[in-house]
Amino acid sequence: MAEITQLIHQYLRHNKKFPLVFCPGCGHGIVLGSLVRSVHALNLNKDDVVIVAGIGCSGRIAAYVDFNTVHTTHGRALTVATGIKMANPKLTVIAVMGDGDAFSIGGNHLIHAARRNIGVTALVLNNFIYGMTGGQCSSTTPEGAYSHTSPMGQLESAFDIVELTKAAGAAGVSRGTVYHVKELDALVADALSRPGFNLVEALTPCFTQYGRGNGFKSAVEMFRWLKDSCLPIERFEKLEDRTGKIPLGSFVRRDIAGLETRYAAMCEGVRRKKGGAA
Image 1 (tube, rainbow, N blue to C red):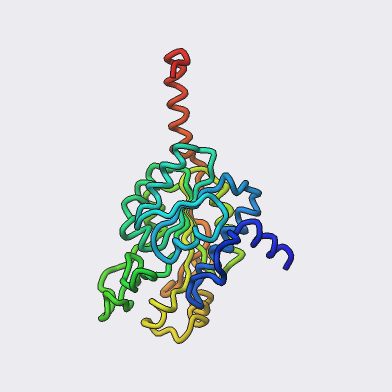
Image 2: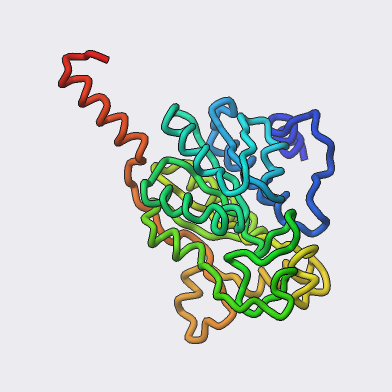
């Protein structure tokens, strides 16, 4: 209990009203806890940590943490995060986004951030829907699922965040859930400690906008679904029938220098050729 109190006072802003703004049963507060615990475990100086958030429920995380924070426009968190990292590579830059923010309106930015391997950690809170902005379907809403913009069922197939980010060239790609908290903590800490572009997808329930319209009787039932449907990649790969199952864990771990490092090396090379001239 004493350690929890220490983390609260050390890493959360004291002038914010608690409890959190998130709906009962939302997993976003758990992701906030994973983020704080990961920063603490790595002994990062919080003055060297930057949280860049977009619009949506996930964006409220930036309001609670006592780091350097920027609240950007919808879908543009990674563009701002890229600029910050290139301007000051020593900073630990984390872009916190929802599935719509990162892969719908912001999808093009994410693909190119992964392709460039810019040294930013992307923390994507995937609840399969636009939560705060009205309950519309997003690019990760499962086919057949109901939302305010797909009342007869979603006709489009959904993005697989892990597979898309892998294909785009990210140095690190992983997936966890807010039910498997210790594993999520480890994935976030690993992403923060590695070079290049690292993405962590966190599956998190949205009972208010998604669960109620898709057959879940309670938020607790959604957590049970995460428990029953999600399993470590090692177990997933041994299954003959993978229907309805979601693999968890680390899918890509490559030690590749980030764009900011390669850019700094190029600039240093140019300065040396010019005899040290600026």
